[in-house]
Length: 335
Image: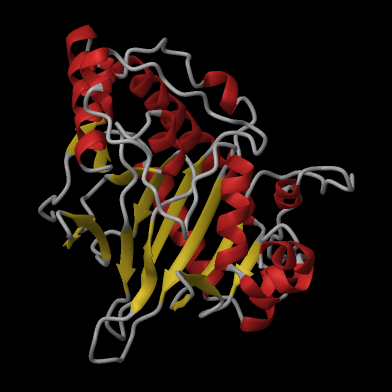
């Protein structure tokens, strides 16, 4: 068992009666006000996580041709496989390969639709591994239940009605990334993924047992966040910081590549509202409002109130090859 470097919250306390649930909410509020990250145990998904790990390993073991058959450059919706070095953070190459999976939808063809609707569309699934789709759908459904429960607990902890967030997540804009970080032979630590804040609301990160690499920014430095047995690493994104006017904080984090011959599988689950949703501001109780820090001001990374605009900003930056092929007009408009 690794030593936790972040707060640890036990999800099962919500079933332990009113006092235990209230204590969980207090810890949840404190962790995301002070750190923006925490470990979450007690979700009951361990058996499913083993299946997910197995199918993830099977996907990355496929012949290169099978993976490239669903490469994301073929998807204007930024879905499918990204080869090693195909994604960027802060303009720098991330050393990882992955498959991106979002809500299964028909593409939006209305030319008058908002730009962010270009993210709506079908996924790309590998024909050589049909079981991937089944396991991912189960994972999506189970983690969606955990995520909406957490949002309801945040609402209560912040003085709002329990269902405050529910209308905005009736058709959530989820994203699942199944990621493999290959080992690096370089003498210095390499960028698996560069420092960033998540652009949405909530992230539940599953990490292959025993595999480190995640680092969280705290007090101006980087702190290792090693995996904890049976736990997710949970963090909030820019939209929850926005909705609380900085009372809750979105925190920079990054991943350092493992040392060769080791590699690392991780699966972040991003739980976000519908693309066209705009989260309202929570009217915090006076004692909490007095401790709000305001939304982070960064001219290079504006935080948009509407989730689709935030998501499109992130995707265009992260995948410049897909953007250049399918969305040259958007790049020109933003130049």
